[in-house]
Image (cartoon, rainbow, N blue to C red; front, top):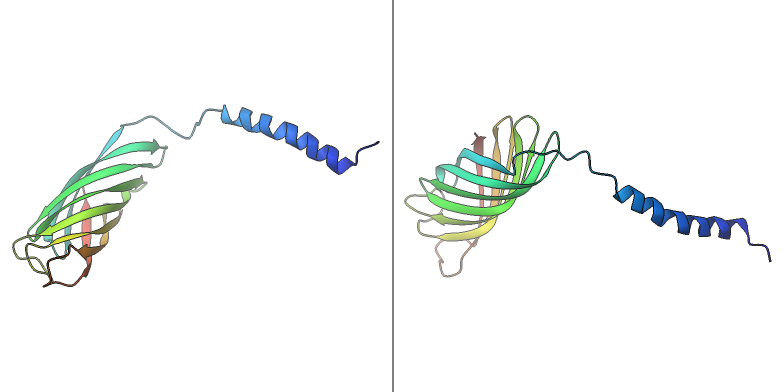
Length: 162
């Protein structure tokens, strides 16, 4: 009994597609290049609640191309109104641009802006820079047991990356 052309085409595709996918998987990724496995992170932030602060950290690069890189990052920051530690993902792009999203723990100290001292906050800290300058926007939740400040803190600031 003759088979219809559509069934033959489907059988042919079913036999050829896995072989083509296997051959494609064997082609080396030429877009990736070798480079430093670690990228330094450093900068200065002016914003609330920490006032003026400086941060340093490292990004463990897991993907690098000719124009950009990305990896997990760890930063520590100390300011006149508190301190913060964060872990997250950082992307480096052309024109000295970076984007970073971190899970952060913030502890206010001294005389912070907008909230009281000696408070602990946990949240997301986002930073975006272009040509070494940019902004940061963070959303923090207050650790329970510290009832004098709001439950949610939205922090913002200006950043200069070094």
